Image (cartoon, rainbow, N blue to C red; front, side, top):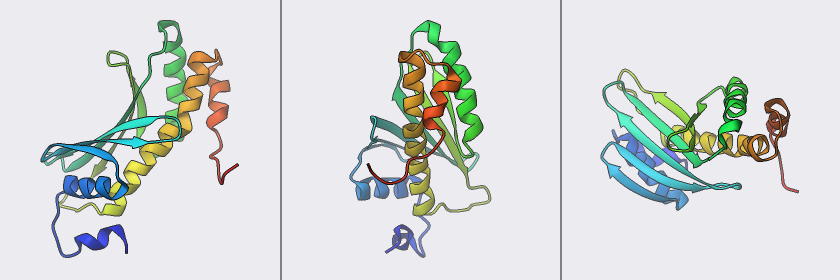
Length: 166
């Protein structure tokens, strides 16, 4: 059964859909408010903190996927150069670094203007894309920061997506 079949003929709040998806995937989550939910999603490299928030004002479901990153001060110019290169490869969403919080952040907004409804598949794809993007570029960030690689060299580890299992 498709994820969205549970919601046919119903007008359901996007955060309710996210809560059901989190329960379905057995992710740890906390419904912060009617308009926001936070969860932890386990990846290969680390656990990612994901928050989704609904803004009725601009009819946008915002996703923020974060993970701790505390590069030394001298590495920050390389981090920003690498993030520019990474964002050139991201067609949906973008990375940024919040230095004050020491967090690497992947952000995406699903605009549903005109009273559109998001499907469970759309929201599941948003979350999956966030985790896959973080997983894809995490090794490049590590190589840049701790392996003393240039941004160009570090990015080479993330150029091709891996398929299958070793």
